[in-house]
Image (cartoon, rainbow, N blue to C red; front, top):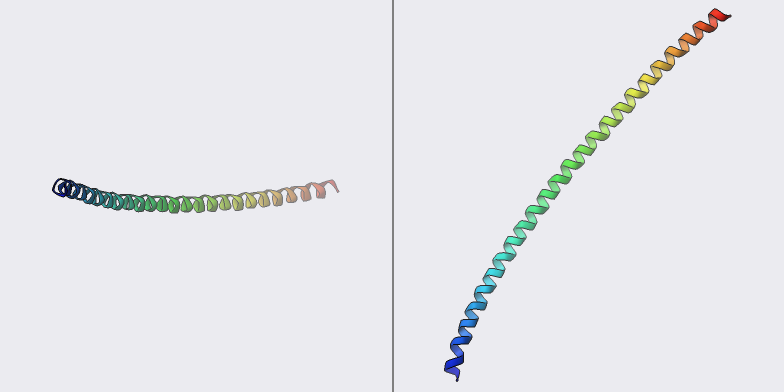
Length: 89
């Protein structure tokens, strides 16, 4: 009986060992893919953050330009009002 079963058991052990090796290889490939994906997401996040900082900087510059424009316009209007008040007096 053992002569009949032992070869089958050895064959199954060889097949299980081969499957274990394939599973290990797949695990390594999955780990590599996961690292690659994480690196890509990290790079995309860095680029997104840089873009956001650039956009916020542009908004701040526009706010300052608008504020300066309003201040100049206000100063011009004050001068005109002062001239008109002087003429009216």
